[in-house]
Image 1 (cartoon, rainbow, N blue to C red):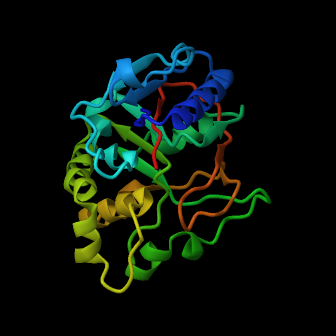
Image 2 (cartoon, rainbow, N blue to C red):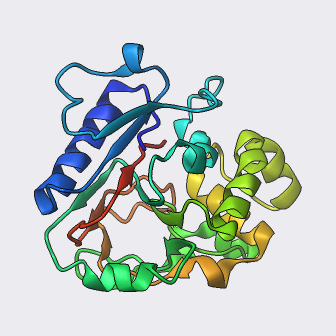
Length: 239
């Protein structure tokens, strides 16, 4: 589900989609935009199986942080089961069985581990500066799996609505000592999980998620997911 009108980021989402199709030509991929007629770039639409407009419009129009529309994911997805990934992610062809064995028992799931190019787990205390300080969950929001009709997913996205639409107020209320300088999707997703007290229900270990830049204190990393997609997938771009 690609939420962005920025031309470069739509092109990035296109590259992500191509990497998924290379792994599994039967994978179904959906791109979400503000306005199909205005935003779609000619020649880039063929790789997407669905191109859908945001169901409630772009609620980030004042800030430009399109990731703040993530609360609309559940309403936007055309799938019963969805994997959301950031636009700066590439897929390589490996066995997907272990991935789906991990995910099938979850209603909504986010990874709790990422690895460096040396195949070593990254230090989450550095990657999640604010979450570590406030004892919030330390999960990666660049990958979110959810079952659309599960109660936990319904509750999570319902909570995400006010958190993401009022993120400045959330920072003020929950982060007294220090806070991000601007919108931070990863911090806000972890706040949603914290407010619902469902870290254990959401946290999943994916040992094939690689952060190739390790500049994750700003969550601007490039990700490599070594899986072969064999079921429905959604792609979202974010800031």
